[in-house]
Amino acid sequence: MTDAAELRDRTQELLAAHPPATTDRLDFLKARFDAGLAWVHYPEGLGGLGAPRSLQAVVDAELESAGAPDNDPRRIGIGLGMAAPTILGFGTQEQKRRFLRPLWVGEEVWCQLFSEPGAGSDLAALGTRAVREGDSWVVNGQKVWTSSAHLARWAILIARTDPDVPKHRGITYFICDMTDPGVEVRPLRQITGEAEFNEVFLTDVRIPDSHRLGEIGDGWRVAQTTLMNERVSIGGMRIPREGGMIGPVSKTWRERPELRTHDLHQRLLTLWVEAEVARLTGERLRQQLVAGQPGPEGSGLKLAFARLNQEISGLEVEMLGEEGLLYDDWTMRRPELVDFTGREAGYRYLRSKGNSIEGGTSEVLLNIVAERVLGLPAEPRTDKDVAWKDLAR
Image (cartoon, rainbow, N blue to C red; front, side):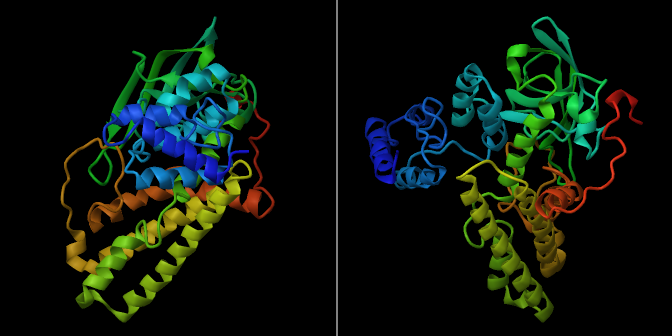
């Protein structure tokens, strides 16, 4: 059993063999992965040591104190938080060896091809088709709201492989090569002026069957692993006290006494407490993950994340008055990541509007919490046993 002392020794051995000050960043990250110190709870040979997940903090603290580089997790968040646990859970050994190392070190960026313009919040109604041709699948369709598609080398993709069965049972999960000539990525300019999202058109894209994750027709079950991890990674990310959206507005309150009113004070106190409760709940959820897979509780965290971001950013703009309406740059850009706290109040206010849509709409997540956490009766679903091809569209 690997313990904290052994992990400290292994980390020091890594630092001695590859001093951060003189070692190329990518070379150091590869050496860290090969030493099993990337994510210690993963199996040996796949960046881990089969150790308890809670011990990752021991490694991270040693490396941080030594000034070692990280893998820029915000830039590769979809790969780390969504693709990796799905590949680990459902991939073949060959797939795990091929994809996990370049994913973790950041050599290959990933995106998620799930949402579709014709399916809306009902993801299981997706219409992108994958047809088997020998040892490959030919995929045609359209995906939307795809973060990082303009940067991605690979994508996690779900497509309909059997239209003659109910919608949840005819879906298969694939790994899609974003460099295939049939993949077209178009920017979607948002209310912020940026285009961090994209729409993706798939025209006769060929995916080898060796890039299928899970069994044919079992893609919905595989996708649940992705979605549960996505909601935890969005709503339950580790942040310090007064981190996230509550940080800038608290700083403004302290530094700008002329903006204060009694009403704003009461609202800020309420939101500060709620943000701290959400932060601590996220910490508790991460501790629960040590013993197993993420559950539907992550949906509750994602709900709180969206609501709090929108209310906090609204309070900040209101507190700043006319100044809060200023916007520094409307240039059309395709950024590598979303910076909620490094921009001005106007950006935060506009960008937070998308929080209740991305990663599952708040309406869908409320249903998940009601049914899977609180155990309330499910809403009637008349299409549950109807073949996908017979659904009204």
